[in-house]
Length: 406
Image (cartoon, rainbow, N blue to C red; front, side, top):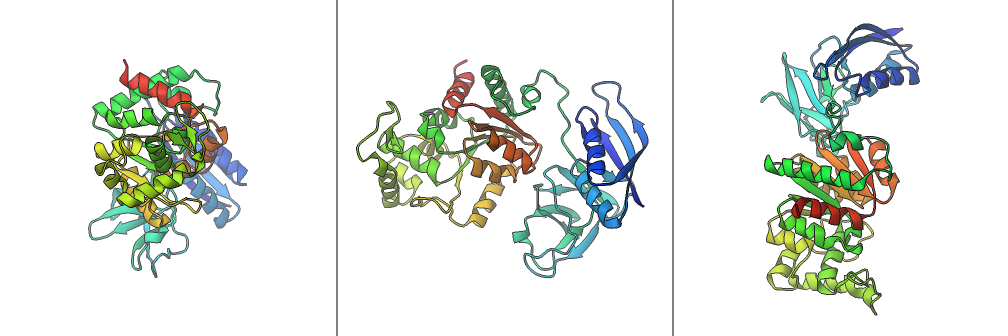
């Protein structure tokens, strides 16, 4: 039997890390023996466990340890991190360490150094001259980059479960369900947003076109105007239908205020794109008076940046849409690391894309009428996501009133 000892520290019992650790070992065909355990007696106390993990083969043991590292398990023996140079652009050495979205340190040159720009499913690259480390997506790897290989010298620290039972994020952090008191949850989110802004923090929105279809665009525009939103990440559709609603009063050809079908309204989004193309950009459309209100208008007027990432199904697209997906990711990453909270509203594609880029420290809320959107986010590794299953037409107006009409 191959054996290695691991250490677990923190709120490992009430965060279920200890239970999950034992479950992973058994599910993958390994065995464990708890060598030491110290359990905290107060809410502020942390716990510690040393566990011997054994498996039939070195390959199976490495597989188990790799999965346990995401939970924050560190190998007991402190070893220097293994570095191997990349042989060519966009190619990593075999056995490279694949990052999680949790706080990570590596043991290099006798010190634990933090890994910057943390993001899941990336590589850890070490700058030996400056004794620093950061993650890079595989597309950004350059020949000669010194890349972390294996688990030796890697320490991951997942976020601890909240100790305050009254916090809205603790209450919400359970199975995805629509059977929760929406108004209480929204009030809690509003209080959290106020605290973040009072401390100089940043809040981002990831939005889909349903925000406009449901008539909630004016509430998101107001939140931008009131200074609660620091960046918007979306696609061609949200921006197009937002500006359609301002120019024609419709969204997908339906009058936003009355819900009535408008003759030839199905062409309005294309006519909107044409008008913005004529102006040259969204900013120029605001300047020349083509655009006089709405989400994108408020972004321009209040210097709130936005990233519009294109997809294969886009009409147009708008001139501000980034059609190269790799460039879209790079632009989104500029803002992802700065966020303290991100609210994802009615867009599975962009929510999953953004969720994959966010560090686990970022408070993340996913609002959707479809429970599977939140479930898919969690399944893909964004376990910090809190889900609210509700209609967007209810959520945004209530959030606006909780924030702006005390």
